[in-house]
Amino acid sequence: MLQTALRFSHTLLKEVIQKGDTVVDATMGNGNDTAFLADLVGSTGLVYAFDIQEQALINTEKKLTELGLTDHVSLVHKGHETINRTIPEKTQLTAAIFNLGYLPKSDKQIITKPDTTKKALDALLPRLAPKGRIIIVVYYGHLGGEMELTLVQNYCQELPQETYSVLTYQFINQKNNPPILFCIEKK
Ligand SMILES: C[S@@+](CC[C@H](N)C(=O)[O-])C[C@H]1O[C@@H](n2cnc3c(N)ncnc32)[C@H](O)[C@@H]1O
Image 1 (cartoon, rainbow, N blue to C red):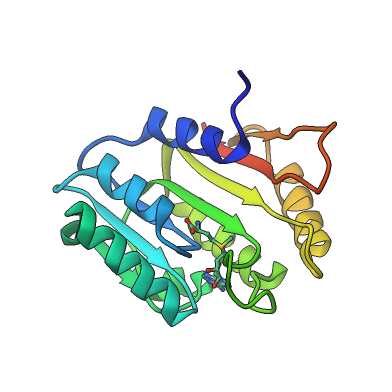
Image 2 (cartoon, rainbow, N blue to C red; image 1 turned 60 degrees about the vertical axis):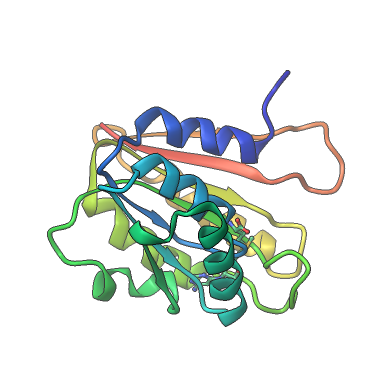
């Protein structure tokens, strides 16, 4: 059976992340991706997880504690546009993931935005290790979502093919705007 965008995002991450790696969850939310990444990098690795909502940090901390994964995660209560100020300059990243949109069962007005998403991508690309991947899962059914989808689409399409391979993964016959996945891989 074909994988959902969410499941496929984890498959793509699993293929490249190893124990000891440093990775980024750019949109922590309820911490599902943070926990997944923390498990992959293990006790010798490090996950930087960003969110602007305090509730996201509370939910994620709770999840990580239950799973015994708190030790190697840095929960950052700041936007992902601060990546360059938060992560030491020389840190090389194996992977990063974005889930763009709003936090499910939360305030639908608090959404990711094109300008800050672009800043985060600009900061991540130079730090990406060879064969490293940035996954962007775009939910775009809400007000403002289409604009962000356009930004991500254009941004990805314009990346030079000598340096990056980029794919998109989407179900084209489903109702209710299923998320679209983009994967940028450094050559
Ligand atoms: C679709 S949710 C992420 C879901 C998450 N991956 C999970 O496992 O639950 C999007 C999240 O992005 C957060 N967000 C919005 N703007 C942000 C920014 N500039 N930097 C980091 N997170 C942001 C929202 O607060 C929200 O929690």
